[in-house]
Figure 1 (cartoon, rainbow, N blue to C red):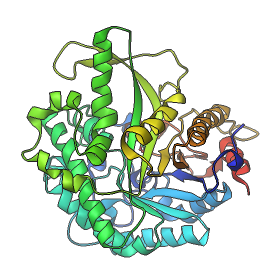
Figure 2: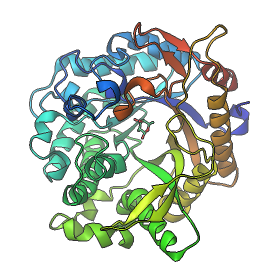
Figure 3: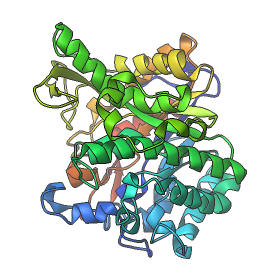
Figure 4: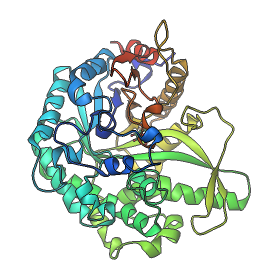
Length: 440
Ligand code: FCB
């Protein structure tokens, strides 16, 4: 059973989240090429050589999708704008059809009584900017601020909230160190630069949004609880290093104007010149802070150069992603944010959800595991709120089954099932359970 509105403080908001490249259909509507198109076109990067060309065809089916949001009794929708749909080359000319699309989307949300929560960048960097070094190039902060200004001028008067960048860790580490996401690099110097420039771009975009009159500005981080694999001091050290470059680097840069020592121990020699002088820009005041949370990790020491660690399997039940289910981790991070970084700032769980091998059968899609996952995590949120942690809202990932990056269309996170052959949408049991829990 899902908790209901009555289990949360007055005014607590419930939403669902999506992102542009994962649902829109990026080969359509005059969008420019992105590094995700290039990454997906390279053999071996994405399961079944899939890509975002059509995805859920949200570009044409957005009205039906907004009706689904409304039907679930959701208060707020977290969506993203594709930089290359708005500015196909990343700089210069604007694709009018692209901006028009987002304009209609925002109006369509408001018409349904749903608050629009904008993310400017959810990972599809225009290829033309990737050619110039992408996140490795310090100039990206200015390019991104210009993009922020274009979007702000068009949508800013009707947004409920805005955040520049989804999950800086994925933009920087997952994509430049682990190579799992575009641009698929495995290079510590590129990583160090991206780790810093992503925050510089965040700060410049916040300045641009605020100057354009947009309010309720925030940042969205992803967190994974890092447990030492055993009780040796070496494992404790490895987990602390993981925690530093994953969970603490970005929030510490913005709220404490410094990077954690355990992460600088490895990244320091590779940082771009003058990085220490950028915190005035990075640490722009924010109106809220968001946490995306899915799982925990077990960290063991490993031979080799810094960070000299490895992830090992843990004992908890797993989702279809192979991710351990650890709801208490969400409460841990909400308390830690509040206590160590954000103080009284409103917090939101900006993503949470699970992948399951959902199939349509007679009687619908019985995703009972997802209902249990959501209930357990919402329970942690309610507990933190009752303790006085200022958490004000929760977003499910995701409204729709979609293009799950390197996993292609094989991993289903949606409240709504999508048949990728016909694009037919079918609400799952979790969708109906949520609609009942949120009914007023
Ligand atoms: C998050 C991403 C989102 C989706 C979920 C499963 O890290 O923000 O796009 O991939 O994970």
